[in-house]
Length: 141
Image 1 (cartoon, one colour):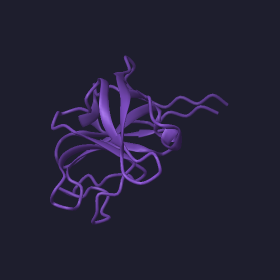
Image 2: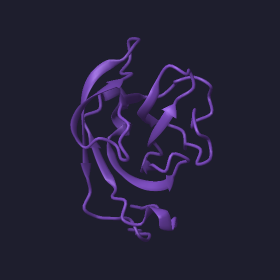
Image 3: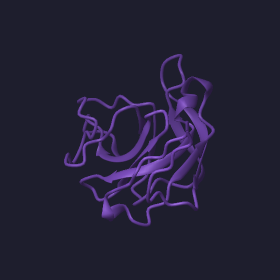
Image 4: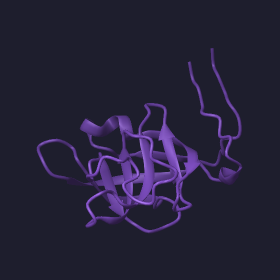
């Protein structure tokens, strides 16, 4: 069964979904189609894929030393918090890139990803805007 999230927030009108590819094997569940789910307090969209993984901008993920990161995470980010959007008090996520853009950086870019073995690995991740914009719900039963 294929399900696509219904985007009800009028503020997301016109925000394109994103296709992510290139994650390391340990993080392959972060590859796939991400649909916009909400705008965060920064005014930037957050996204979720079919495996429940998220992509969002966090002005400071919790340490005070890692500002302006686009983050791959397993948590739904807060839409009201102005920093530490996953509320864990630390920068605990699957991967990140330092970028202050209004949308995640498209094209192929080097992301820091926790691929196992301790520390991050520079990983070439490709983000492509999907020409389809989620406006309703599809179900293939």
